[in-house]
Amino acid sequence: MQRMSKALAALAASFVGFVVVARVIFPLPDISPREVSAAIPADPETHLGASFVDAADRQPGLSGVIPLKADRMRLQAG
Image 1: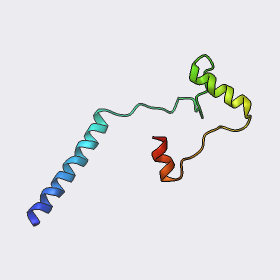
Image 2 (image 1 turned 45 degrees about the horizontal axis):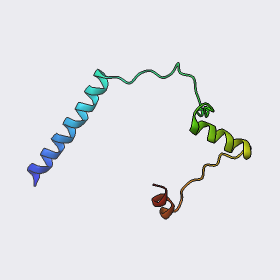
Image 3 (image 1 turned 180 degrees about the vertical axis):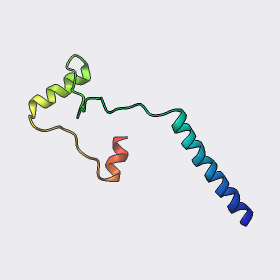
């Protein structure tokens, strides 16, 4: 049992070391100069975008998006 726990600890330490080395070798890009955006606007030139624009024009101020709170609703939507 002690041998297995040592092996698991060594495996976990190896994984952590691998992640640290990978983050140093392959750093994430700097996103600080990017412009902040809240949403991508609907493009009325596409079929899907046109349907969103039409729906938004019929109901100003409402997004038309509802959260799927019940599990049954989630299964039916998928």
